[in-house]
Image 1: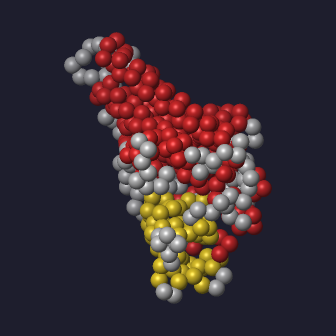
Image 2: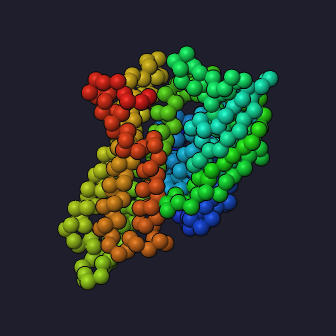
Image 3: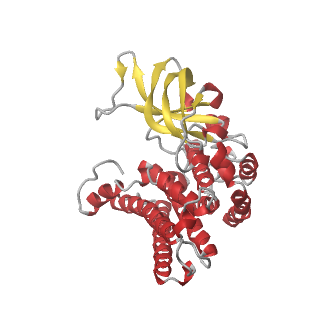
Length: 383
């Protein structure tokens, strides 16, 4: 599907998402009509390989689709980001297992990658048990994935370097249990509940080593895995911040604070704040897409992404979140008392982006990792 078609579909769907965004806030999952429309537009199939019935969309286009949907509603954009990004595992699984999981047109995989579960080796596979947190979109998913530490009869297995051996396992949603935990202040519509399974057999072909390579030559699937997935994540705060700035501009001609007879748009301090917000957002957006396009060009040319380049990509992703938060905070303050109403869009953007900012992939703690590389030191943790 051409990039222009996907982007046009996202722009057409955005007003409908805006109309029903309170549904996600109240019910903590996607509005059914919006979910159906997203399936019809094939948004969740963007990262699934063509040989599995997916769109195999280039990364910058997928990011723009996520950004557009997030500008209509942050939680819907986040759910799309997770559901689409998890299509990448179809390029790592064997072709038959990939078709089983991702072949149906309504396929969505949800789950957590952190290895908090146990996968005990048995004949032809593993018996899996455990619980996991923050499974965004689990309510509309068809399959779940989970990170596990591999155990044999002697206990946890170790890699050659002494670290635990880990695998991702995939199982039908009907095999697990959703644990209702998502009562967050923002991003309520993501439905990021906990989940658990108990003694479920998973055949070996539906599991992956944590660092499994792609079975396909397309450069899209040979990008560093977390760089690809987290770049899509970084598009979400860009969309949320865009929504906040636009919402403020729409009401700036009115008086927003008690005791003031001057419209917000006529106040020099407010004018400066919206200028700062716009500048921060546009600069962060440009750099994020620039680093992605540079990395894609290198991979297409057969060059590996260097440690320095990986650090700059991560820095651009974290900066996208930092700039998004900065922009929304400036708008929240500039809007005065108009910001505080829970049904208002500015309040929604404020709550959503501050919850999203706690995700480890875009957390400010990543500045340390990137700064170490820029100073010629080894990164404190893997990039």
